[in-house]
Figure 1 (tube, rainbow, N blue to C red):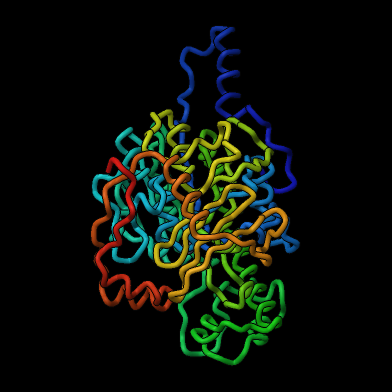
Figure 2 (cartoon, rainbow, N blue to C red):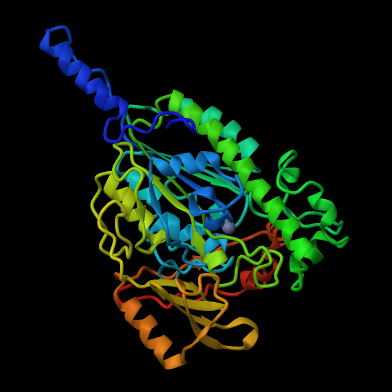
Length: 467
Ligand SMILES: [Zn+2]
């Protein structure tokens, strides 16, 4: 990795390649009896919770929220149209870390945990001899849902500062002769705990809270954070202030990553490592009236950034327009690790040729069902007991202001055809157990609507034939 503004990444020539060339030269003069020990391969998967793709410079945002990620993008393969599987933390991360669609893993409510016989990415890698580290912010990512399976270390933090402490402790302990997988989840862009005092919802530290709009906090209405969070009619001044605070959180995380990347580079940790930066979903920011509301099935919640830096410079600096999904990450990582593909996984390795016409499915069982066949996005909306079917042309109408007519029969036909193209399914989820205190903590973060579901049996995940 290079700092922004430094020399362009030298595609195809890593430090270890240079070492090999040097050693060969030395061998030629009979001075090198043994090749220096090379580090094994690594994968670092960074999930920046709640990060909208279109609020990053590399995706065309006007504010300087992301100089470090922009620089990373210039030496990486960047996906223009990357989608989550549902616009909230739990199912999206389960798809990211198993490679399964929501209707396959079934972990779509706080009541559900991954079936013990459905393998996680960490389990697959650990079985193959990889060291596995998972650092996650307290959120719906928890061991109760099966997220910890396969990790040698699966440790929670409360923000980027503590995550940095854990990294400083754990990374030097890695055995560099063995491959490693690091999953790193940051929640600092997400809203913080909501209380009854007036406040900003987004809790980025100073000076980031003032960076894009001095006095942003004071511009918000004098109502409780909870009330602001749930408000459905926001005036332009409130949206401007909330957006400035949200953007401050992005810059805070970007500056944090800049320090970590420099440290990892200095340790040689990135020489043989596939580095992936993405998000589980975006954020509404008043776009449909709601202050937060990343749960709705619109592009601001569904589209995520996706940046893949290959250590050999593969496709460095390229932009890929074919639509892709978080379910593609596990096949990509297995491919990088030299492991066999699992035909049951629906995704494709992203450094290969990605099919442009592949339909993508998104699902939140009580709220929506979406089929994206680029550039058409078809939606079945189920909010509030009312059902509607409509579609959008994402090229002609990228912010989805002009819905096109769609009937139920047409939607069902397209969705079923898309599902039929997927691989075989997996066993249904098992029950997850949450304590009351944990549910209270989730409710304070805005997951209150999910609390009811925690009492239900896990939803039947509409499994594919063959499970
Ligand atoms: Zn999330």
